Length: 370
Image (cartoon, rainbow, N blue to C red; front, side, top):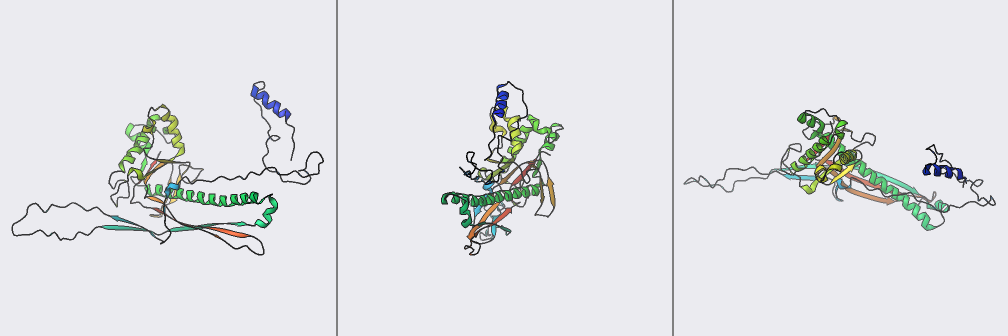
């Protein structure tokens, strides 16, 4: 282990902290280890005899469980069967009441048939993928001082596989959301808030300046909340128009870009006596990005409905019915091979199989700062 005398650095840092010296550049290379050392029998020895090897006193297993932010898009599990079927029964239309204007000598046929009008949709695209990891515990023993220590390390290995699965589920759910945004493009369900505000109030805001304007930010939230109210009524206004539908409050899902929510907090909420009136009126999930961390509010998707390449920017929010999009986590199988007799290792495979869906006949609406 490298030993560095840092008393001069301590005095320098203290003098700056106490206000005795002005702020200067501090070289922390002698203070902070960046973890790039390779152990060596000639350098990693104790300082008295310079012979005995220094021991690793503590091992930190760097591992944290990752929680899928979009876990609420996993609708349900199903193990048997292969196809997701959605059945919709149309509402009947009203007709004249035949108990009025009865005619002598004639009868009313009360056996006339009125078959229900039923639609079905079949979702058949499943998406399998797998992860695998190799463990050779025979030679790993040489790196640990106890069975428990090695077991903890192997636990981290498999924990990281689980994290990879969670991240994959989340990112594939992000792509599902981005696809829904692309499906809104070119329809009345793509709400360009800045254009709407500028038209109503003869303003000239842009996608940048609008986020510093308290009036606009309040307008944006009131508009989003108006649509949250609207999808609770039976209509064809908030889907593709093919079916009459509504979304009860408990089934409303709201996804909002976190940077927009932060601007809302600092521009509007801090001065509001009742901040619930300037927030989305539903349970929300904040996301740092839709598709790419480098371009948080942008999506570029080849739309499944017509194979068109759709690019949209400044997307800040998506509200949708629980059943409008999601993931049916169909199956997860974990299988481990026998130990390879020659190499003394075994492989563990994680097989994932899911079905992702978007149903345009359900309610979903997109909001942008365009």
